[in-house]
Amino acid sequence: MPIKTVGVIGAGTMGNGIAQTFAQAGFAVRLVDIAQPMLDRARQTIDKSLAKFVEKGRLSAGERDGVLGRLTTATSVDDLVDTDFVVEAIVEDADAKRAIFGSVDVIVQPEVILASNTSSISITLLGAATKRPDKVVGMHFMNPVPLMPLVEMIRGQVTSAETMTIASDLARTLGKTPVEAADYPGFIANRVLMPMINEAIFAVMEGVGTPDAIDAVMKLGMNHPMGPLTLADFIGLDVCLAILNVLHEGFGDPKYRPCPLLRRMVAAGQLGRKTGRGFYTY
Image (cartoon, rainbow, N blue to C red; front, side, top):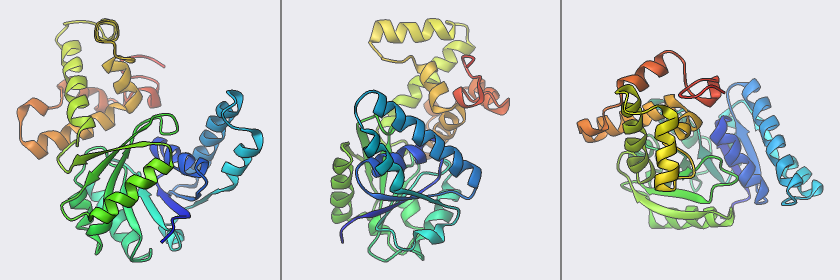
């Protein structure tokens, strides 16, 4: 079945980036969120992002208008009934994602593949909430989605080879590079990244160095383009905590225990860029 219309569930940072990327690749996109203000904000964000592409000569004004014309929004998953492929990009919470997958499963056609942008949660667990676990796959895009080339592809316990091929080919159509990972907590990206971020936060808590010093060491000494604490603020400290909790619970290994300072900052609402304050002030 040719994929022409793509549904994206969740209009946050990742959802609007995924929607923009599909629309730029020529797909009709239906972006769904329960809150209309989120959809309005997502469209504004996409508009600003496309304006930058036009300024840099990567898109013409006409192409930008075409991208926006291919994007529609809705406040109910019922509006995904005629979509050919669905990507879920809601909050990193297993119960919430399972509920969405269960709802979408009974709405879309039986042959439609359901993908999750989860950065750490089991694809097998999400697939089990549906009657099509062989058609459930992980597609973990990187932030910012329109710019970052990687899509981490996660094969669940019963995800079919055909599903993996279709989803990987779709990623290539978007101009991305798909890299397959097994269905273990955190997959590849966050199993490697989050312990580093967590250790950097421990180093702050223990007075080993200031956030500036720690980031400078990793940038200047390890050639990282962004320090781990700046990156944590960019990702969102609440998201970092959620992923570390998945790693800690999934492996039962104390090395993944979230730093108490991270827990305290999240409890205080200091989540990074999106709240204006994290390890840095924005």
